[in-house]
Image (cartoon, rainbow, N blue to C red):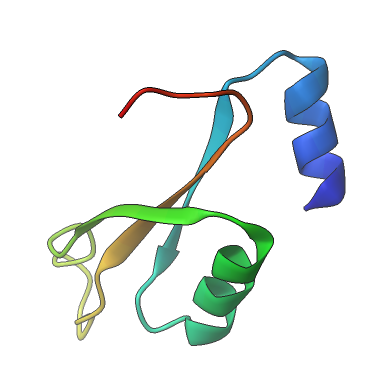
Length: 68
């Protein structure tokens, strides 16, 4: 994650967005500890996949000040 954030900073990116499944609790905890904020979810993203009940969670890490 450090390398990805370093690369984003080199590109002058305003931030990073990533997505994980709601059943991936270890990843969610990691992103939260790292400073990402949960910005939204999509409960239908995986609906077409058989036997998938999880939602897509969208996490954001802002690298510059952002007005919300």
